[in-house]
Each structure stands twice: as C-alpha cells, then as structure tokens.
Length: 453
Ligand SMILES: Cc1cc2nc3c(=O)[nH]c(=O)nc-3n(C[C@H](O)[C@H](O)[C@H](O)COP(=O)(O)OP(=O)(O)OC[C@H]3O[C@@H](n4cnc5c(N)ncnc54)[C@H](O)[C@@H]3O)c2cc1C
Image: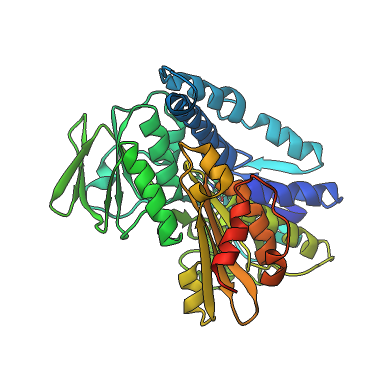
C-alpha cells in the first residue's frame, strides 16, 4: 500500500478521459490517468471505429450488388475474414493499447493500469494504493452494454457489442435484441455478409429516438435486405440449447445461432463508488453543471455524464472540463444542437429536437420535408437513394430547432443543418442562400420551402 499525490486524477481513459488527461498533462499539470482496460476506451476497440470498418465493408458488398442496376453485372462473394483482420491490424492493434499509453506518458502523464474506486471527492483507490488530487478528480469511466433482466438471458452465451466486433465469422443466423443505433447498424452488417438476421425491438419502431419517417425508411430498407423485424413487444424469455438460442416474443419463438444484446448502455458510476460524492445519480449517471462539475473539485465527462453516449459528446465535454480545471472557463455546455448519426445505409443523421420533442416543449412548430429521391442528386444516385430531409422550425423565432437527414450521405448532409440549428440561422436566410447543384443537400432548400414560411 502506498499513498500518492497529483494535481489531477482522471478515472477512465476513453475518448473523454484520454483527452482531459493528455491536455492537462501537456499544460504542465501533474496528472495521474487510471484505466482498467484499454486506453482509448470503447470507441476504438469495440465501438465506433471497428463498427464503422464493418459498415464500410458491408457497404462495399452492397454497392457491388447494386452494379446490376447501374453498370453491368457483378458477382459478390462476401469474406468476413478481410474486415475481421482489418479490425485486428488497423483499428485495435489486436486489442493492444501500448501506442495510446505511450502517447499519454509522452505528454508527461503518469499512467496507472487498474480499477479505480472513489474514496471521496479528492481521493481514489487503485488496489491498495491511494491517490490524492490537489486540484481535481475527473470521472470519465464511461458506460457498458446494459443487459436487460429477461428470464434465462443471463445463463446464455449471448453477445454484446464486444463479441460482435471481435467476431471472426458470420453466424448463419443472428437475433439482435434492440433496434437502436448499435443494433440496427450491426444487424445490417451481418445481414449483408449473409447472416439471417432478426431484430427484436420493444418499442413500436426501430430507432425509436429518431423521427418516425426515419424509422420507417430504415425499416423498409432492412426488410428489403431480408432482415425480419419484430416491434412492439419485448422478449419475454431466452434459452440456449447448446447450439441455438430461442427468444420468446409474444406468442412467437425466434431462433438463431447467435444472440446480440444491444439494448442500450448502462453507467459505470455505481461500480466505482460514486455514492461517496453524496449526489443523487440520474438513472445511474452523474449530474453535472454547465462546466462538467459534479461537486466542487470533481468533474464528469462523456457517457457517464448522461448527456448522450457519443464520442463527440465526450470530446466536447472534455474541452469544457479542461478549461474549467485550468481556470479559463469559457461558455458552458450547450446541448441545443447535439448531432448524432446512425450509420445504417441509408445513414440517419439528426440534430436538435424531433418534431415531437419540439411540440412537447410547447413551441409553435412548423415542419417541412423532402424525399431524397426527389432531389436531383438523389434521383441520379438511383438504387440506394432512400432518404428524407426534414426540418423542424420554431415559427415564433423563425429558426430551425431540429433536423433529420436520412440518405446515402445522411451524416454528411447533417453538417449544414447542425450549423443552422446551433447558429439559429433565420429561416429567411436559409431560403435565400445558394445550394450547390446537384447535391443531396439541395434538399434542405426544398424542405425549407415545404414549411410554407
Ligand atoms: C458498437 C458501438 C458503436 C458506436 N459508434 C459510435 C459512433 O459511430 N459515433 C459516436 O459518436 N459514438 C459511438 N459509440 C459510442 C462511443 O463509443 C462512446 O460514446 C464513447 O466511447 C464514450 O467515451 P467515454 O470516454 O465517455 O467512455 P468509454 O469509451 O466508455 O471509456 C471509459 C473508460 O473508462 C474505463 N473505466 C471504467 N471504469 C473504470 C474504473 N473504475 N477504473 C478505471 N477505469 C475505468 C473503461 O475501461 C474505459 O476504457 C459507439 C458505441 C458502441 C458500443
């Protein structure tokens, strides 16, 4: 047992914590960074990066299949080992974080591999060692795959995102429990590689937080690609007979070689003893003020702060937290224009409020939309052009408060919409600007016109 001191202790070195720890160390503070698994966190090893490599590979297969409608003939022979190898060689270094550890220590940080437990607002234990922070403790311990208490499930060899990302082979059949972003993305990947996929979603539609139009388009595409989708009923039991899973949904029994549980993320705050801070967790997540402070001297960033489980959220909050700790606080966090993208094909990008959220907020809501196939570029694109651009306007202020962009480049088209929402660009300005021809984002102009404003 030993006692150590530091200016700042950072718990968890995922995208949020790695940024805070590295930046503060570079700024000359004595920083201890504690990580129990891999420096870099979920995103590079089991999340964003490898999943997008799988999506890129599956997209290439689908483009090959589309050649017949555009350019001749093609034969596509999926080989999952190519992307499985790429994930090992290029994304995860075979789940080795030495490069990231060296990057942090190279900035002057002190690295500790181990599981941190909070002892108080300025004290953290790792095994028998105790670290005391002179200036701040930053909690960036992220989230984990939440596993619902479905009878029988815990006793089966189900997958979470981690096993799905590490898969070397495509299962003959796959049941995906949860039709959110992660479930929908991975369902489409495995289906395009030849798996017989069934999605089970308890809500009445997949991608429930998105605009209903977006859910419908993705439902239609996934269904056309051979995926079976059950909505409106939660799984009531799960069993595994040694070779096959059976999931009961209502009066149906769904069978599959593998079961992927993608039913959301749970906070890691309870596991690290955050109760010693004396704050009430919100659905397990740490409450933070506009400068990411939980209680004086304790900050939280990223998934664990409960404002949205996105890497860009973790990085945004990291910057705010760094400035606060360095005594240079700028503007506080602004969540009025949080963008996020579901990387299905078509991609679903959205920012700010959905129509329903705007109505619930009591705004005077006017919406407008345009189908992507009706834009010139969408029409030219032809096969694979499913999509919509929808804008949500606060008519009293004459500004966009939300927008959704579904389409082959839905996430990229979102950028202009995100600027419009964040910058509260007047609708009159959006009506009187020039949209390049023939882009899909010309559909923004048509959607604005559709509002009638
Ligand atoms: C399949 C999948 C796909 C995704 N795709 C995207 C995407 O396309 N775009 C996007 O923006 N986001 C995506 N995400 C979400 C993104 O990965 C997370 O929002 C992001 O990783 C959160 O960063 P973080 O720093 O808050 O936490 P994490 O990445 O969860 O890192 C937290 C770190 O803390 C460590 N830790 C936890 N407890 C302790 C402890 N007690 N002591 C020491 N260390 C501890 C963990 O080991 C981990 O390394 C995806 C997630 C998944 C699962």
